[in-house]
Length: 167
Image 1 (spheres, rainbow, N blue to C red):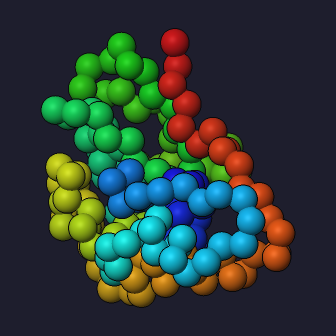
Image 2 (cartoon, rainbow, N blue to C red):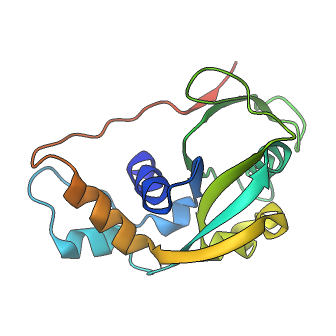
Image 3 (cartoon, helix red, strand yellow):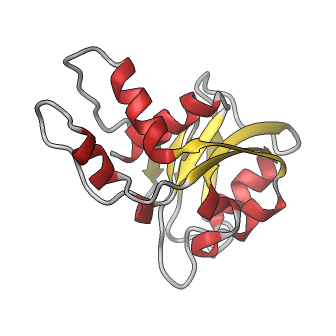
């Protein structure tokens, strides 16, 4: 569900990447016709989406914030990464790869979508507050519904292993 939602948000805002917090995903969707009510159960908060600019270094830094007082794994779209649980906090993220297999450039600016809760540093992801050029977009539920309606009548979405633990 996390891949699906992050993909929907990235497509809606037309950005390089999207990241969403697991607490914003409240349910799975069973096989069969998807109703508005089911979609609302998945994303009931109506958080507005925020398009913003972040450097590759900021993206690495925010990913490393996932291991704080408690582990909170962000759901992602537009890239993949590996992480090592044996590394020190702040250094757990190893390789961040773009879809073409190249490494993310720490100095390059990328367009990123997150929900308004995360953009304000919610769940302890304070690096998002350093982003530039913030633009408010549609609500997360609307992006999710738009993405679902753009799919073929019958479709499947499977885990894409965007986040891989090493060791």
